Amino acid sequence: MAGRKKELTPAELDLFFSNLELVYHSGLPLSEGFDILRSNAQSSYDKKRLDALYTAAINGESLSKALDRQGDLPDYALSLIHIGEQTGRMEETFASLHSYYQKRDILTQSIKSSLTYPLSMLVVVLVVVIVLLTQAMPVFDQVFRQLGFEMTGVAAALLDIGAVLSQYALYIAGALIGIIVIVVILRLLPIGKRFFSALFQSAPFTRTLSLRLSVQRYALALSTLLIAGLHVDQALEYAEPLVDDKRARARVKVIHQEVMAGETFLAAIEHSKLFPPNAMALLAVGFKTGTDSDALEQVGEQITLETEHRVETLVAAIEPSLVAIMCILVGIILLSVMLPLLGVLTGF
Image (cartoon, rainbow, N blue to C red):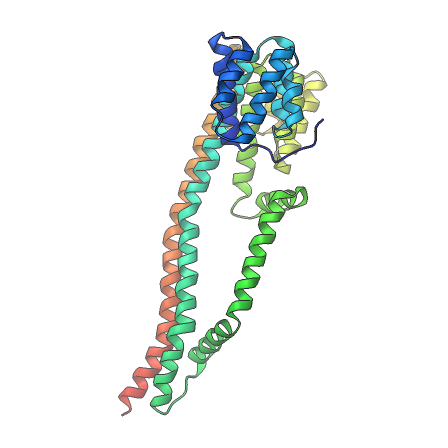
């Protein structure tokens, strides 16, 4: 296998496989279709990938091998394309991959957009508190000194914190920038990806989300693999590595082991307790009517909608909490100064 480059994002994969699906659906010779795509490529990376497909089509070479040499497609997609070549179902394969990565991208973008506002609010809270401590508190301290008094208690402690922040502002800013750089670098390295994945799986607020995302990805992957013409045991083998959450992975292993031992696919899924009861009812109907791939796709879509709703509900609870925290912090800072100041003024 070729050396791995940075893999394409779900949005990029969605667009790429959508274009390949259109080429196969059009009935044009592959070389002509790929030539049209590469002439309209938006970036040098896209053009290089499409050039490889064009060359492979001209030389009668395997498309999966040509894409493998590029090194920027996930192993799952490459395996599915290779199987599509063997079964002669390339259009269905690219359509399934397009649908799979489209749903992954929709859920990813939904989660990101839902979390953007709370994170922005958190930054605003921190900025407001820092400005009060470093700019407002020294002004109040001067007022107290002009009146012949000094700040005490909570006000004095807050003044000291503000002084430290002002004195070491450059060092603190440098440390924060360093932390951000380290986080960005770690996200690009395998060890960093494993660390953040483990953190996402174990953090109290994201544990459930991690499990649901893995189940959604597993259901959609199985649907895609079955549509591509794979047997159940092959589909289970290829779908298993896509499950990141360790709790979901343990249940997926149970499914695979039971199927290999001769158990039916539906019974193995039911024994694993991987899917919620409402999803199991849908799967039972799908497997008994021969529409198992459609049922798995519907389950994946159902989990996507439920996950989006859970994220929106969580965000709806976080937003007022952040506003309340900001009000409380600002109130504590102001009251720690204003109450003693009122006491001093009423003494004159």
